[in-house]
Amino acid sequence: MEELLAIVKAAFSSTFDIDPQTITFDSTPNDFPAWDSMGHVELASSLEHAFGVSFDVDDLMAMENVKEICRVVQSKLGKVQGARVQ
Image 1 (cartoon, helix red, strand yellow):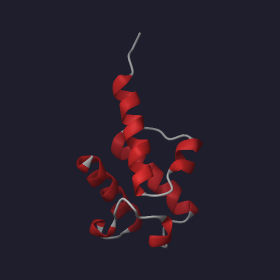
Image 2 (cartoon, rainbow, N blue to C red):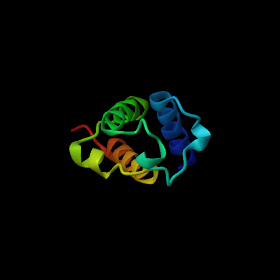
Image 3 (cartoon, rainbow, N blue to C red):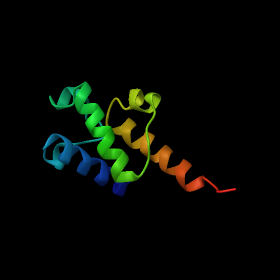
C-alpha cells in the first residue's frame, strides 16, 4: 500500500504542483483549491497513466479522498492482474 500511495502522491504533485508530503490518506478536495471538478478529471487522467488502468464514472464519483482513490486504484489493479486471456 505504501508503494501505491507514493504513486498517488506523485500524481497529485504533478497534477496540482504541490508538495507530496502534504498529501495524506485523509486529504480531500477541501484541502487543495486546485482539486475542483476539472482538477479531479486531470488527476484521474494522471492516475490512469501512472497505473495503466481506466476509470469509469462510478470510480470517479467514489474518489472523494485519497483513501478512496487508493482503494479504487487497488481494486482496478486487482482486476487487471486477475484478468485472463481466453
